Image: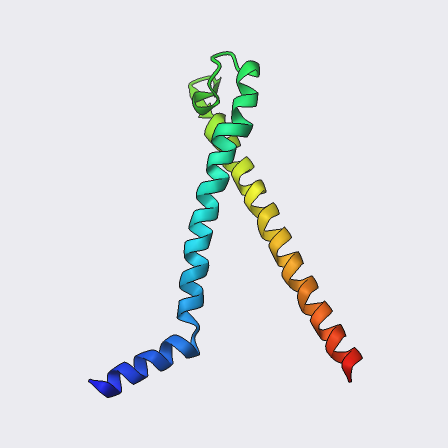
Length: 108
């Protein structure tokens, strides 16, 4: 049993499973935050422009076909906000790494 536990710990360290799990949890939380911002702050601004006043049920009918564009618009806005957040975080991380490398080179 001790050997199995040791192998499992090595697996967790080697493949950085804990970091991946933390990233997953943070991603889910960020997604919920973005969805809330979109649903409760951004999308209500579109209500005055919709005939029914509800973006969640906004549809357009083309002959026998009815397309629900409200949920699609919300998903697009959620994606754009999430993409912006990821871009800003990655940009900050990359900038910090470059600054650390430059500082290390100057110290030499």
